Image 1: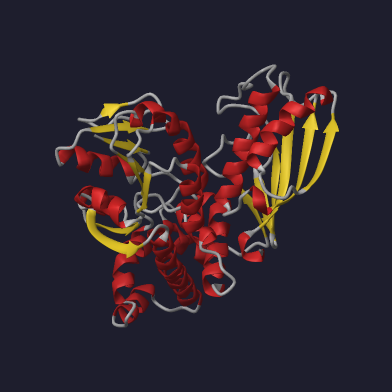
Image 2: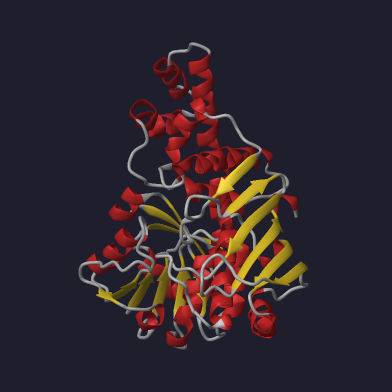
Length: 402
């Protein structure tokens, strides 16, 4: 039996292909969804309870770690987890450290978007121990061509290396088209000329988006940003510039659009040195502030509190529960920009009852396991919503400045 965790744009058609191939599949998604022919589980632990193979297709490293932590009580000894999200080799290594030794792990991110996921024509970049790869090779073939890259983490590293070329190439083409328009060049003629060069395949792929506007989301712009953030390295100056261009587009509200929306954005936008960020992985703000601001080499994260997506207080009267919820939100926002708690330079905490500091401290130590950052903790008479007991904000160094 196969457990499939994550039914987004890519996960749903991939799970459907497994069902159509005759496999017994149990699915789970944070927002309840179903796949015809598959069993729907109420929790990750329930979804993996009988699974020999567990596949994850989620948004970012924080989501993968959180979901697999929830699934851990149900994992069978001897099961193999196939991590198909794009999370990078560091996150894969961290997962390996967290998982029981008797559970196998293969990192197998994919190249391709929604239609190849439906058609089974993705390219699967698989890394892992030979025995673990052997156990999932046939299943991975359901999704498309399998390229076995090497040992653990190699598939994740290969995916980021490839995206470091593919995404900036699209951004470069968007800026080229914007330059052509500003210079009075006919865009159709420009595309024809570029189509006759080694860029021809890319030009034809994006031509419909240039001429007719971005299509339905196949590769989300915010996910492309995430990929480039994870791949950040001091040698990648061009990729870093593309990342910053896409961050501007995300700040302009295009994060949920297809990555080809950058063509329209490049023609009108002026890059900003300050970017406001509102990741989809956390509940939306009330519109009066942003969850985080990126400026220079620093990430400033707004104070996070224990409110669910509906604005209801989580864990009223329970400092431990509220602290866990707040630290989880911070972890997701940091992950959206390629950071972890190890990158935090300062953490500021507001408590309504300092006598409960030890409860918060115990939670904080579970999340911040390395050398602690600079810290300020103050007691306040109240927070902005009755029932809230804690608010935490952080400042972190961005990956390119490590």
